[in-house]
Amino acid sequence: MEKTPATPRPSVMQLAIKEKAALYAAYIPLFAEGGIFVPSQRDYQLGDDVYVLLTLPDDPQRYPVAGRVAWVTPARASGNRVQGIGVRFPKDEKSVQLKVKIEQILGTALGSEKPTQTV
Image 1 (cartoon, rainbow, N blue to C red):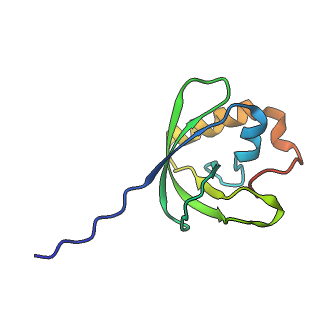
Image 2 (cartoon, helix red, strand yellow):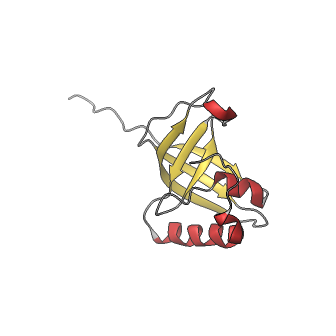
């Protein structure tokens, strides 16, 4: 009897965002469900499952996000952008609440023209 190869487990990353400016630079409002940029040296492929433990500014709680890689910023990207991945939040109630919480923290900064790590 042949064994089927095990599905690789999603990698687990921790992302602690300490200040509003860093959250602004990492948040991805472009995704309907919301998303976050996670700096990483690892090579990821689009569609890879990832698990992020996210900490927001002035909030001791860690928010678990079982997301998917929606884009990759490679090493030595143009514009001195940080290597990493854009993680799309899943379509679930927890993600909706997390997106609302992030957008409340950012408030009026969401409409800013300041550059971010994202698109």
